[in-house]
Amino acid sequence: TIVIDAAKTEDAGNYTAKASNPVGTAMSQAQFTVLKDESAVPVKIEPDTSAPKFTKGLEPVEVKENQPLAASVTVAGAPAPKIEWFKDGVPVVADGTHIVVKTVGDEHSIVIDAAKKEDAGAYTVKASNPVGSAMSQASFGVVSELQPPRFLEALPFETEVKSGEQATLSVHVEGEEVEIKWMRDGICLVSTSSGRTHEVKQAPGKFSLVIDAVDETDQGTYTCTATNKAGADKTVGSLRTPKYGFEKIPDETTAPFFVEPLQETTVKEGDTVQLKCKVNPESKPTIKWFKDGQPIVAPASTIVDGVITLSIANASSKDVGKYKCEASNEKGAAQTEAPLMLSFGAQQYTQEEFSSGLSFTKLLTDQRVEIKQRLRFEAKLQGYHEQSVRMQWTKDGGRVPPEAKVCAQADGTLTLVIDDVIAGQEGAYKCTATSLIDQTTVWTEARLINPGAMRAAATGKAGPPEFVELLHSCTIEVGKVAFIRCKVTGEPRPSLKWTKDGKDIDVNRVRSDFADDGTITLSIDGVTHADSGEYRCFAENEYGSAWTEGPIVVMDVGAPRPPGEAPDFLAPVRPATVYEGETAVLEGKTCGIPAPVIKWYKNGK
Image 1 (tube, rainbow, N blue to C red):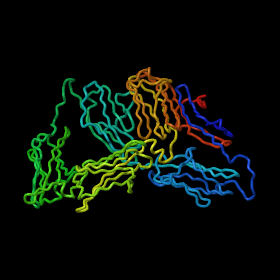
Image 2: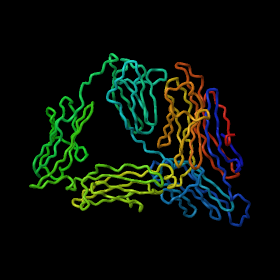
Image 3: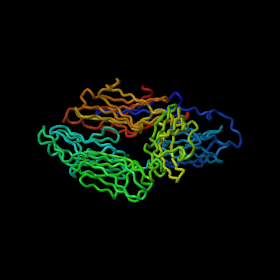
Image 4: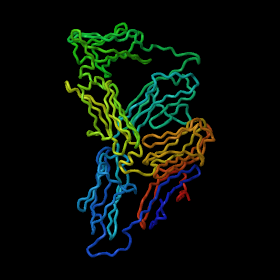
C-alpha cells in the first residue's frame, strides 16, 4: 500500500508496484488521477448556509446480470448541492436509457437497466455547493447466472496411436467456473508435470490430455467430465494402439451410404403414402427423419435389409414438404432428401403453396459490427409468397432503426441492411413471417453486438485498458508447452503487444489468443532455456495504455524446482481518483515465499 497525503495535481501519474524475491518478480500498474476541487477555494459564507452532508450514504449493491441495479443517497445542504456520479474515478454518463440519474428533493438515485458485468465497480457520488463538498462511495456488483457446462468439441469416438508416440485427447467446453476431470476405464487420472499423463489448457475452454510414450496400458475408454455448480456434461472416447507399428486396427463396421435415394413423391389427399430409400445394410445405422429441416417422430418408420420406409396415413396439406432421411453410425453419416407433394385430380401442390409449411431454411446469426461499418442480417424463408405472407422486422420488440433497409426476394431471401451503423442500434433483431391464409407464424432472431467503440459510445463507458487479472510466473520443463494468462478491460477493445526482456517476441513460435471476455493467453510450444525471461503484455486504446509482466522459467527435465514461490499479485493495484488536498491510497495484494520486497514507481521512475 502507498498513501499520498494532501494529494496535488503533480502527484498524478502511472504508478507501478514491483514485488521481488530470489525466485522471481511481479508487477502491477494503475493510473492515479487528481482532480481540482473548485469548491475548495475560500468563499464568503452566507447566513443560513451549510456544507453538504450525507444523511443516507451510498450502500453496496449486488444484482444478477440483466437485472436492474438501483441505489440512492440523501444529501442535506444549503444551497442545494450539485450532485455528480463517478465509476472507478470516471464520471458516469447518464444516457437516459441504460443509466438514469434522478433527483427528487434531497434524494438522489442512479438506476442501471439490465446491468452487465462491465457495470460493476466502485461508484462514488459527490455533493458540492459553495460552502463545501462531501462524497460517499460503495461497490456495485453484477453476478452472472451460472449455466451448466456444455462440450462444443467432444472426444473423438476412437483415437489410434502407435506405441511409443504421444497421444493427445482434446475437448472444447463452454461454461464458467468449470472443473475438468479425466478418467480411463472409470479410474480418475491425476495430471502431474513429471508423469507421462498431464493436462494442458491451451485457451479458454480448450483442454487436452497428453500421454507421452503411449503403451498398451494406456488403451481404454476415456471420459472427460466438465462440472460447475450449475451442472455437468461429459464426453467419451477410446484410445487404441496396434500391436505392431505397421498394423492397422481393423474397422468393425463401415460408414453408411444410400444405395437408393428418396424419390419425389405425389399423394392424393386422404391416401396413405410410403417414402422409401435403401442404405447399405452392413452399416447397421441409426435412422432419423426430418421434415423441412426439423426432426420428426417417425414411429411408422421401418428398416428391413437396408430398405427404410416411412409411412404417412391420411395425407393432408400439413404433410407436404421436403423430407430427409439420415443414416448414421460411429463411422459416419449419410442423408438423402426429396419433396412430398399433394395432388387434387391433375393438379399438384408443393409445400410452398401451403402456408402451414412456412419454415426458415437459413436463420439469422449474431453480427459483430463496429461503428460506421455495414450491418447485414440475412435469412431464407421456405414457402414465401409476396401476396400471401406478411413480413415484419423488429428490434428489441419495437421498430427497427430508420436507417435500416429491408428486402424480401422472390426466392425467400430476407435481408436487413444498415450501411453505417451508429451507437444505440445494438440489440435483438427479429424477422417474423405470418401466413395471411391461416395465420401460421414463424420467426428467427439474432443480435447486433457492439465490440469496443460502439458500446463505449452508446453507454459512456469509454476508458483506458486495465488488467483485472495479472500475468503469473510460469515454471516449465524443456520441451513442454508454456502458458501465461491475464485479463484486460477497456473500451474500445485494446490492441495488444508482447515483449520479452524489453524486446519484441518471435511470433513464429509464440501464439497469442485474445478472447471476447478480455482473457489473453500466450503459449510457446517446445520451450527451450532461451525462452526464459520476463514477458510483458501491453494493452492500448485511444484513452490510454497498461501493461502486466510475469516471468517464464525453463528448467531441465527432472531438475528440482528452486525453493520458494515467485511473487504474484493476488489483487492488482486499481486506478484511483481523488480531489486535490485529499488523501489517496493505492493498494494491491501480493504473495510469495520468501515475502517479496515491494518497490513503487511513478511514470517508470
